Length: 70
Image (tube, rainbow, N blue to C red; front, side, top):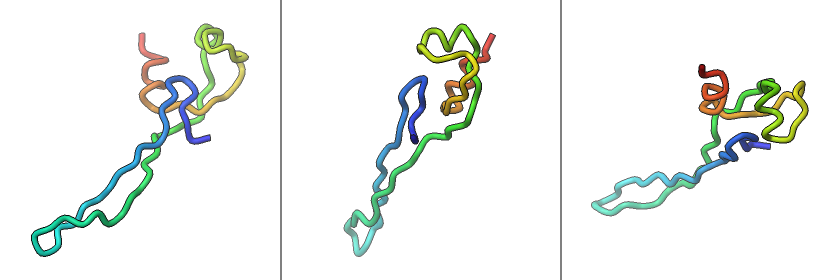
C-alpha cells in the first residue's frame, strides 16, 4: 500500500511541460508518492484508528511529526 494509514494521503499526478518552438508540449505524466515510513503507533492514537497498539503502520512524515509533537 502506498497510502498513509492516518491521513489517507496517496499519490498525486504531475505533468511536465516543455517549451518547443513557442508552444508547450505535455511530455510526461508521473505519479509522485508521499514519503511513507514504518512507525509504531502510540496506544492512545491506535485506539482512535481502531488498530492494536503494537502494530506497525506506514505513515507519512507529516503525520509522524504530528504524532509525537507535545
